Length: 310
Image (cartoon, rainbow, N blue to C red; front, top):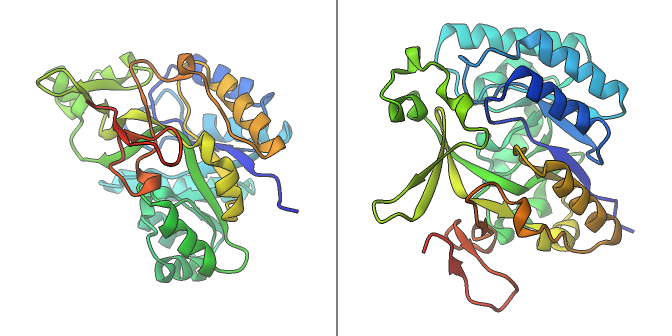
């Protein structure tokens, strides 16, 4: 008998108010999620939630029965970022909280202690996975563009004790840059951005010149315009030996989405999230899973892929 899939809540990618953030995670304490990732992963300038706030929230969630992981920044581009990353790792370790490394400087800073290899470490083949296991990784999240067959091959050779966690819902993080695109949109500099990303609770949509949805801008992060939905692939993921399915937070209907995935995993079926629960202006996509362009959506096996940007 296969183990029940666990559900994780990915680290919050957007810049919400402190009150909204705390309310969201206190609702998460009563939800069906098993694992909650915390911390700022996009921009070091975002400051409404300080490290001590995140750690206090981590302890609350742990007391509520959740497994908690503190996530490192994805782009470390200053000495201050490096110091803050070490401080986070030290404080999380002191509280017995696992760390997700999203940058190889964080992997090095773990010094052999157990950690989660985040999706931005780009684990594409078994040699990388074995090396990360030797460095202390106990769980890995493959990059979102990894296709089903490639994941199946990794699963055949993954190290003993290594857990696999796959994103199954939410806008996909495609790239990070030293430049803040949200600030640029408002004709501001990154160092004087006025925290305009806080205006967009699910990111700022970017369209092509002919008006087709193309990308989503979230500060220095570029996301897909579409929403990844692998709800129909839950049985397949379980057959492949995936341990955890990962949901990306969004500003509305998040706990309805969690409830749908929870119900589906308990009966070994498909999660059928209704269109009203998609992020604003988003359509579904699952192309990467099928080794197709990521923005495509295919309803059932055998149907023709649809480019959701067309």
